Amino acid sequence: MDISGPSKDNKERQQLEEKKRREEMELDYLAPFLAQIGDPEKLTRQEAMKLKEDCLSDLKQRLIDKANLIQSRFEKETAELQKKQQWYQQNQVNMQKDDEEEYMEYCSEAMFRINILQLRLNRHKEMAPMKYMALEQKLRTDGRLSEFF
Image 1 (cartoon, rainbow, N blue to C red):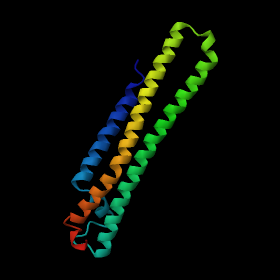
Image 2 (image 1 turned 30 degrees about the horizontal axis):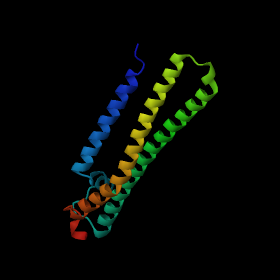
Image 3 (image 1 turned 120 degrees about the vertical axis):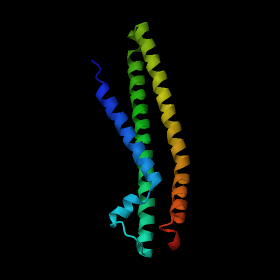
Image 4 (image 1 turned 30 degrees about the vertical axis):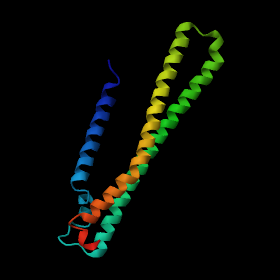
């Protein structure tokens, strides 16, 4: 019996939902915020300013959340590797060759995951300001808001 099946399916479903949500956001990033104020035909200047602010604030929070998630995964992987290294130091004398090879393989895989997480975090930090500025530009040129900016 494969116990990883349901969680893998759940993860794939979550990834598909997130992808769909991002695509919808790209199609009409203002839709959720317009819905909150009753989807008016014509916006006031104050509503337009608030929409822009709310939309940018939402993106900023999602970018922060993603960075925090990557950072926490990085820290977890690093802590697990350190714990395994301490265990190895304490048990190294009594280890069988198979155990030592298993440890080395674990370290190699853990370092790979840590490096990937570090790359993801660096890339996210590099791309986040550009994503923010791109959304800000889209909002300024959006037909529903452009007359106010």
